Image (cartoon, rainbow, N blue to C red):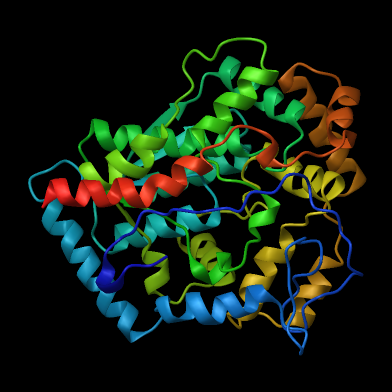
Length: 396
C-alpha cells in the first residue's frame, strides 16, 4: 500500500491459509495481456482472458503510483522532510545496499538529491564478486558511509539447511530476514527515523503471493529451525513480530520511504545509467547479485514448484508498458541456466553448505510443502488492527 502526500507506510501482508501445496487442476493458460500463467495456482482470468494480477495492478497500484509531475512534487516534499530531520545529525536516513540494480540506482539518486544516508550492506555469505565490486563503486563515487554486517556463517549455514529440509518455497527467507533485521538494528542504533527502500511498482507490481511467504515471519523462521536444525543460532539477527509491526512503525515512528515510486523508473535505463556514470556492471538477472538467490530462483523454484519468477518480473514491466507481451514471451523462451552454469553453482553451494551435490539435488527433488504446514504469525496478523487501535488510543 502507498500513503498519500509522500508519507511512508509499513508493509503488512495478510496471506490466506492453505493446507497443502496447490495442485494444478486447470489446463495451462497464459494471461492475454501479460505473461502470468497457471503456474500461479491462484490465478484467475476474466472473460477476455486477462488475469487478476493485471486487474489488481490497474485498480490498486496505478492510482497510488506517481511516475509523473505529481510524483515529482511528492518526491520534493519527501526529500525536504528528510533533509530537515537530518539537520545536526550524522545521517538523515538509512539505506540498504545489496549491489543489485534497484538498491544501487536508488543509492546514487539519493546522493544526487543531496541526502546523507548511512548505507548498510548485509553479507550473508553468498555475495558474487561482481556485487562486491558494484558496492565499492557506488560508495566510492557517492561518498556515502558504509557499514557491512557479516552474518555469522555457522548460523547462516544452519538456517539455510533447515529451510532446505523443510521443503518450503521461499528458500530466501534466511537471507532476507537477516537483511532487514540488520538494517533496522542499525537504524535503531543510530536513531534514524527514515528507511529508504528500493521496492517499486514499476518492476515489482506483479508477484503472486502463492509463490512464497513473508520473510519477516520470525515465528515461522524459529519453528522451521527448531524442527530441522541441528545447532543453536548464536548471532543471527531476528526481528520479532512486535518489533517489526508495532514497536518500529508505531512507537518509534520509523518510516519506510519508497522514492522509486515517485519517478519514472525503468530497470533497463537504470542499468544503462549506472554503467555509464558509476562503473557498475550488470550481473544477469533480478537479485542474481547473490549466488544462492540465482540458484534458488533459476533452479530450485522452477524445478520443485514450477515457479519461474521471471514471469512475475516480466509481467510487471509488460503492464507498465516498458516491454510488450511478445517480448516477454521471447525472454521466457531463454534457458534459466546453461548446464555448465548450473553445475558450477551446485558445486559451489554444496561445498559452502558442507554437503554433497547429491544431497543438494535430493532437497530439490523432495516433495514440496506449503508454508501453512508450519507455525507462523498469521493469527497475530489478524490481531494487528486491534493492537494498532489500542496504541492509537494511548498515543492520543
